[in-house]
Length: 353
Image (spheres, one colour):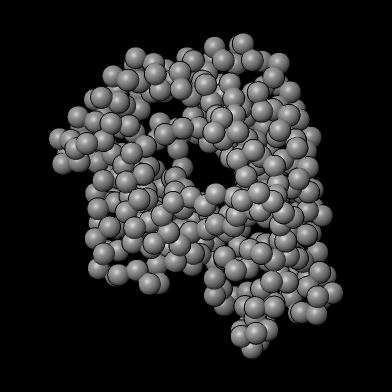
């Protein structure tokens, strides 16, 4: 698979998240990093990161000035009102809930922790957080009571009207075919339709991103240059030795510890392996439920994850992060200088979406 296609398919998924179609968090969400922007992040958006934990991540609302909290809340209110109107047309009661009245997730504070404190409590946040349960059974939401009064059959119809195809999978993540093109039209229910009314159609957003495929390909090549920089290579070797001294030998790349935990969780939940979209199909995927996982095995994995993440974070802080950041900022500065026109076009294009 071409790297440019990988980049585009990643951004496409994030574009969907930006317009409200993806509701669930990523299973490997990372704690808040340094507030200091890299040279490239100035153009790619606040959420862009060339991560020392493995690879680059695009901002959901990449590029351009970020909306104020009040502007975001106003759009969320419009989505709630449109969702209520759509559900009424479908024959169901739905109360538009003001976004400011929603209770904060119990993990909101967790992801504001410094990386070392997050690792101490949650490891990488992979097996330690049951993402499939977040936001469910919120008793303060009037729609929870409305749904609970329905029969099992009516609940399924209600869920389908509200979330469409996402209803059967918790409303989490949409996997787009690797060529960046949509297959079958995805039914996202009243929530998805409401989001499109406010933020625009997902297909249009993906078309916006496709214009920058060449830039994404160059950014992926930049990531590889950073990883191949001798300073990063030496720092990676030092990090590997540090982890071995801490009792975690065998890791050669900085993203391998996180991948090992994810693989172990996949084995426990029986959800290993990525789903491949078939021609004309979109694949809906999401975080696995821990309901049927052996409790002792899950407890053992969580202990392993936390110990590994603590050692990983400590070793990165000690021998890796500074060297990586120095190489990253230096090479990104060169990249910005040679790609200024393309980056400005991307920033301005995303600001006007």
